[in-house]
Length: 314
View 1: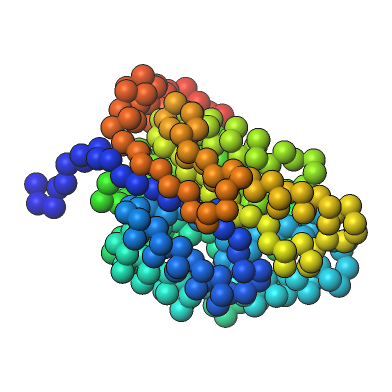
View 2 (view 1 turned 135 degrees about the horizontal axis):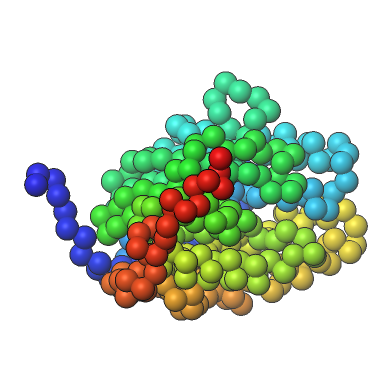
């Protein structure tokens, strides 16, 4: 067959970003993203995974600031510094991927050219040739995100092909969405990128949630999962801490340095960046490790009966 390439289940290196965004600065965070891509490529990575809304930052000020002018001013700055796809900033990142011959899943706060007021929580898929091959917009914004993000309109799409196999991706809470997982499973990913924020609030033990959801997803999909998470910058704390208690909480989260993780198809953490200062977490993985778990439970194939469940959606 012309153009047919047999999947070889090779060994690859992956990189998870656990850096701070440059707070609400589109140009500077784009430059940082390009540097991280170059650094990952120079160290042999085949895939780099970015956190949720890394460019220009994850908008979580609703958990601290009251609904007053300060909040809306941050929303305005967010819009002004959001990424357009296509657009010059995402094109710079795609060019960095081409130069480094590396695939990427990039978390962005997205706006659409010519519109005002509507933004999306998105992941952009870029292949190692520097092509933007798709965008996944978060299916449903979570809690405070609904103040600035519209529901995603890119359908169930959440995966793309690379030279080593399929990479799927989901954002934050949708990594525990059974239908989102099933949409990914149907593409048979060997690696899944789970993009996360730095915190949600005192009521959510975020690092525990990240590990629990990501491990469950890796086990269900029978693939490797990369959980990327930003860290909290001092500029973010200065902008959103409403009182001393908020500041103390955010500083404590910053000092903990909760980091990224790489999880194997059995749900076991095989690399984690907690407590270290590096902006990137690397892991060398053997993609053939997905085969035996998938032979046991293939939820897109022999281990499912979709015809039994279809009436649930009528």
